[in-house]
Amino acid sequence: MPAPKFRSRTFRRVNKKLPGGRTKLFHLKRKSKKAHCASCGKVLQGVPREMPYKMKNLAKTKKRPERPYGGVLCSSCTRELIKQKIRSENV
Amino acid sequence: MFEIGRLCVKIAGRQTGSKVVIVDILDKNFVLIDGQVKRKRCNITHLEPLPQIIKIKKNASSDDIKKEFEKLNIKIDKKIINKTKKTKASKNK
Image (cartoon, rainbow over all chains, first blue to last red; front, side, top):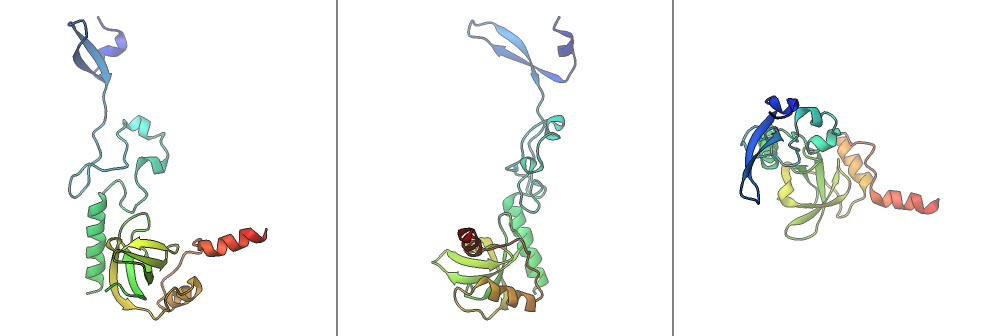
């Protein structure tokens, strides 16, 4: 029986082959999903992939890029958005 | 399109959305910008031109640009101090 803390589902079960040939069951921590862009769905840069309890302790600038819409839209999507905004204002 | 005095908006980087003016054209890809950002070199792909053009000389000083921007009532942040001013002040100390 694994240790009590490993019996909960916060740990994911992974079977790994060891150099000796036998396999062992590892209990590994779960990771949150990567941050994705709100419009094109690409993976965002500059956003760490930590569980919420760890993200809380990070500094604000560590959690997302300092650009407007940082952490929400990827760089190319913000460019397109700002361009359309300017062009619609100055028509 | 990208000539001296042309008003643009920066669409990339930390200062996205800030209004700038082209002070000098360096080469095919790069221009010198000033205005709501510190005076620096910028790639033209990071700029979006606006229809307005303001009358400034080539390499005009930041004070002239601030006056022009006040005419167009575009606010400039007080914190933006161009390096040229700072180095003079630190030398006198």
